[in-house]
Amino acid sequence: MDKKIVVVGLMVAALVALAALLALVFSGSGSFRGTAYGEPYPVAPPIELVRSNGERFRLSDQKGKINLLFFGYTSCPDVCPTTLAELNQVLTSLGNKTDLVQVLFVSVDPERDTPEKIQQYVNHFNSKFVGLSGSMDVLQGIWNDYGIYREEVQGDSAAGYTVNHTARVYLIDMDGNLRLSYGFETPVEDIVNDVRLLLK
Image (cartoon, rainbow, N blue to C red; front, side, top):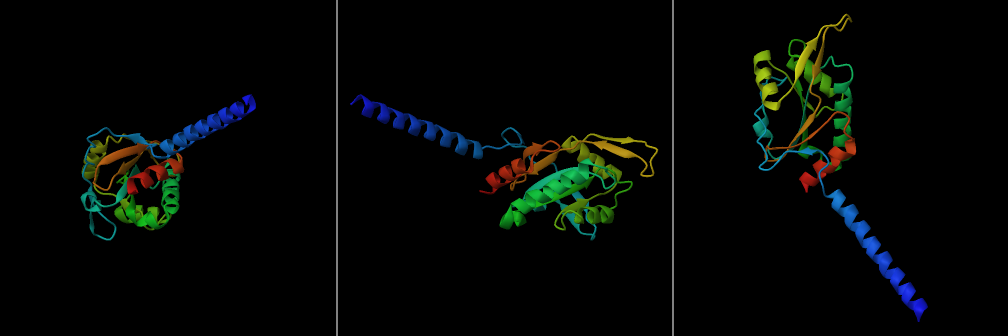
């Protein structure tokens, strides 16, 4: 009799432990991993620039898609190519939902980045990426709206100056709201997790 009670007790304990483990796993998979904006979610500041093909790009026209926005420049030696390569991995991981996500790369170096040059640059990572540039005055307003830090640093190399800049990816949801942001070298799977949650 005592042996049966011990066995039943162990089985109950095992079931409770399993239930707790499953609850932990499923609750973790349902939470965002990026840095979240508080509710009510702020509307993403407008972006309106001319694309390399002469068409006008408006962020407001992108509603219905998740936009992953990054500010950088084509002469960047490390952070920008790394981030764009990782964003390409994000799209690859989404399979048939890729068309619901748009990657935007906005220049912080308009003196060297023409709309044509920046689009050619992003095409090396993924031809569906949109590269955007414009005049210093127009871009300065966009940088200010997104809180982008930018500083030119003169160098002795053939590449000339470099640009220190904010290295965050901004996730804009399908309603045009700022929802999440990600620091440099955030694991790709964290961004994929959040995009999938918002696409549900």
